[in-house]
Structures are given as C-alpha cells and as structure tokens.
Length: 595
Ligand code: GCU
Image (cartoon, rainbow, N blue to C red; front, top):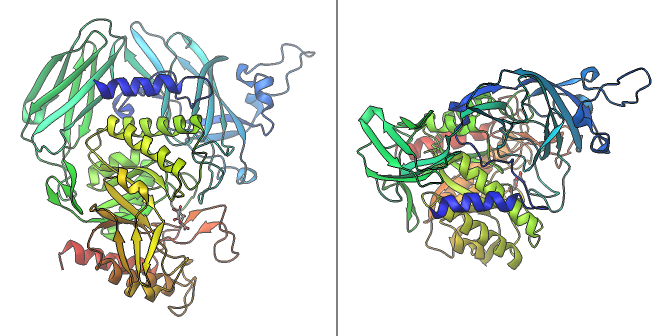
C-alpha cells in the first residue's frame, strides 16, 4: 500500500510546475509484452539551435495554405533520422551538436471500441516536449528512463502526426549536470510505440520473492481505469499456481503466498511465465525468483555467499558507435562480458535499455543499475532532487520484476559534503520505500590515507548503503601499477565492498614495455598487480573494472591515442580484445573454479 502511494505521490509531485516531469500517466510496466504498434523508423527532423520552433509552433506541422502564406519550416521537405538512434552518429554535422531538434512522423491508426491508446517512449535524451496532431501531450526530463502519454481522446481514426522536440542541452541543475565522461548522445534513443489497452487494465505490478524468503511470493498489482473492486488472477502455469484476489476500489491488490519454485541464479537463470489477468486484460511476463541480501561483508544470493565477477560498461554500440539500443547490441556486449567470465555487470552511469536487462535475466548475469547522479550536481536545488527522485522511481518501476537486477546505485563519484549526503540520503529512503527487496549502493572515490600503503573508505554516504562501491585508479591517476602489490584497503563499515572501478587506458595494438603508459602491456600490468591486491581485501564481495569497451567521450582528446575515446576498454570499440582482457578472464576462471 505505502509503496503504491509513493509511486503515485512521486508521479504527481513530478507533475508540479518547475519540477521534472514524466509523461502524463504512471509508467505502464512490461511494454515488450503489451499490444503495441511500433513508430520506429525514419522520422523527419529539424535542427533548431535557437528553439525557434516553440514560437513558430513547429508542433502544428503547418503547410503554406497558398503562395502568399508564410511558413518557414516544412517537415516533409526535411531530412530524416532513424528512430531509435542518436542524431550525433547519424549525421556528421551533428556529432558535437547539443540543443533542440524537432522530430516528426505521420502514421495512420484505426480507432476501436473500449480501447485506450498510449504513446510510449523507451527513452529520449534529455528533455522532451511531445505533441500529437498539434496538441501538447506533455514533457519529460531525463535521458534514460521511459515515459508514456495517454492519447485515447487525441488520436484520430485515420491520419495522425506526432511531433517531439528533444533537447540534450546540458544544464547545471539537471541530472546529470554539465560535466560527464561520456558522449551526450541526443535524440529518440529507444523504441517509440503506440500501446493499446482495454478500458481497465493492469498497468503495474510486482511479483517477487519476499525479502529473505526463498518460498514466499509477495507482490502487488495496480489497475488503471477501475472504479470498483475487481478480481485479479495471478498464474504460474508451469507449477500450477493460480491465485485470485480482489482489488480495492481504486484498483490495488496485494499477493502473499507460499510457492515451491526453482530459484534464478547465474548457473540456473530460470524464468517462469507469469500471467496476470483482470477483466479484459491479460499480461504475460518472464520472471525469475531469487533472494539477494547481505550478511556482514558477504553478498548472499538465494541465501548463499556469491562473489560478483563483473565489468562496468557504457550503453555504447559496438562497431558502429553511438547510443546502443538493439537486441543485437545487448547480445554483443553481454556476450563479451560472458566470454570474460562475468556473472555480474555494472551498467553505467544511467539505466540501460530494457533489452539489456531482459537479456541479463535470460543469460543469468546479475546487474548493478544506476541513475546519473554523477560527479558534482546542484545538490541544494529542489527541482534537481525531484528530478533525481523521478529518474530513480522510473528506473525501479521499469525493472522491479527483473531477477537479474540486484543493486540500485544512487550515484557515482560525488563530492563529500553535507548537502550532497543529505540529497543522497533522501534518495536512499525513496529507493527503500519503493523496493525493499534489492540492495542499495553507490560508487564512491573519497578515501583516507590511513598509512603509506593503506587507504580507508569512510565516506559518510556508506551509512545509508547496503553495499559499498569504490572507484580507485591506482596505477593510472595516481601511483604506479606495482604499488598495488602493497596496498591495503579498509572500510569503516562491516559491509560488502565492490571495487566498482579501476583500470587504465591503451588503444588496441599499441605495444611497449609494461611501464610505458598507453600500451596494452601497461594496462595489463595494472590488472596483474590489482589481482594481487584484490585477493587481500577481506570485505571484497565483487568487482567491476573500468571498462568493457572503449567509448566516446568529449573529455578525451589525445591525438592518435584517444581521439575522443576513453581507451580504458578491455575491448576496443571495434571488438578487438586487449591483453588485459585475458588477464582478467584468467582470474575469473580461477575464481569460478574455486582455485
Ligand atoms: C571515473 C568515472 C568514469 C570515467 C572514469 C575514467 O571514475 O566514474 O565515468 O570514465 O573514471 O576516468 O576513465
């Protein structure tokens, strides 16, 4: 009950003026298994650096009525972009472009009785205004979470046109703010689709094991459009489970019952077909059941200690570059992680696509999912806090039925100061109210030098977390690779530690001696010495070195070496495996074989 009210409260407050907004209807969960009509494909676009389109009402998609009429834009005569996709890698002249771009596409639709229609966006970076047939539907802020608008009364029976202004301009009060180490790919970066639903339908639900119980299913379901108590049935046909509950007048109901299920794990990524039905609505979902907890410095999966053999990665498309979005992109990236010997990935620094998460469910790869509270942001600005809360709410709402997701991360490398810790403490409280079954973490990087070769993590943020993430770049930004042999790491808490980032840069194919920076040998040496160091950290429960694949960054300009790429990948952006890949792979094989 509390959790449901919080989703609605966070949604309603997000709609308040000046605060981050998120579509006009709470997120419809499980879009991949809903009745949808794709609007992907080729959309016209107009680049609008001065945002003239707002004043000139580009969203009306007007045409000159006669030879005297003054209309200074024409979508039909404008160039096109593929959706989904970023504009930066589709048009050379837009590689560095940050600002407003207007998208338009026409489509025909056949209206039907008792059918509600929504338009759903998987993501759009960063701030969007959406219009249908010239009418404003609303706005959305945040580049990596889904949003939807109801268009039942606005969609025409026949020809329609949708116009979306997408603006990826960076702002001091935004999330992320002005400075990041990744390319600010702009556009309609994930799937766009119409979603058809009955008048009353199941828009969100959680069906998971209760915290710490391998047998009790504890969940809830929320209908929309219900004006009286209604029956909802939950089925897991494979094990003959069928439970029917009655909702409250406003469409909410909870489930609590015992069930003997095969538990999801990397070794056995068991997913069940779960069916929820109510009235004219029926939703299928593939759900795995597992428990995730901590005990002291151990992380327990299904009650057993597990070590997270991980890697960090950006949502960058292998080979072609640009923002990744497709099933193929996910298969390539997680395929490499699998080849490395990973049972865990840290998806940085923002929620990745649902394709990626659902593939991790199927492959048995555990996931760290993060919101882009990155480096320094406008901590004391209420709209920034609301924005971060909305992105957190939507990240959790989209993936709260995914067994693979074990960790919600609130932030990355944020400065230790009171206003920041207060901000993040509030996010931690929000996350715990929304989802009490998963673990909370953050990637921290402020440590105390508590001896020549000893560093202690005692960032006050650690207090509010279940698992401590630590980014350190010994051998790259400070010290030499071999210094790791002597380095001791301590933390101020009896909590599991994940070394969430370490590494060094080397363009593929650049060779030299192990003490020559920017060579594969130097990068490999950082890994070899780190493995010695990691084996000595008592509270270490996992690692996710930086980074699986080289990725574009506007902060990396060294000619002939970086060329606007962060070269800390174990694999180049063209898929070439560097020496360090095999160093880490060997270590993970040892860990997996228990050597
Ligand atoms: C940081 C940061 C990453 C960045 C990396 C680097 O730790 O979290 O986003 O890319 O260091 O400097 O390469």
